[in-house]
Image (cartoon, rainbow, N blue to C red; front, side, top):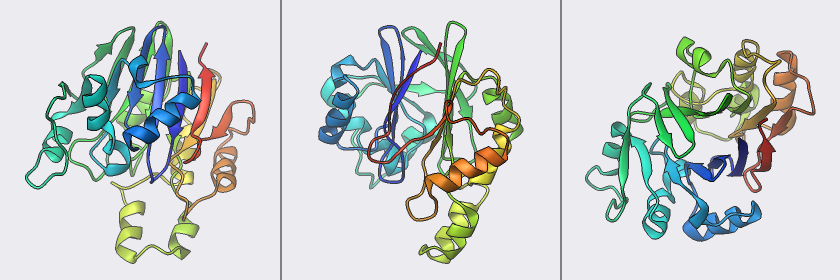
Length: 259
């Protein structure tokens, strides 16, 4: 398996999981033009993609999904709740010409050579899911946009070989930052986003001897820094520069081999 990102943060997200000829794009928060440019940096074009898998309906994750899928005839996998959210009256999203396949939380499905486990998470969306991807004996997890680490999340992600993990904010920086009080409560709430320390608490229960790559992701540009995120994970006992890195909003990160 291989893992890469075309960008990670509040301005747009997109993660790639590859096994053989199967390439899954998780979310697409960029325009089609920008997505093509970012894919090209990784040696890909949209025609190489097998499917798009959606975590939830927020714009930084779904902005480019339907236009990309429509133009390049890509199937889109999402929960019924996400589908209902984007097709609600007044929505700017158009499902015309897009093949949508329903995802059911906890029920595995396959995209080519990759088996996908949808994991329900606490977030302020209608039916959000994050995902664990399996090919052979390898497991790659994508886990962002959740406000708390539930026992179900721990069970699903404890045995990953690679993990893209949200480290959205530092609580002190969030408290002192420019957000209005209502947004601070939302971000720091149980259905908001993981703090560095919450991410660190999950790291303590992972099978760290198995974990080849830990990518800290979805960092807030206003309420976090890579240094804060890395320090929190190091404090949790995972201080390994060879295996830990930070995904950026502009660059994402290049291909990582999951052997």
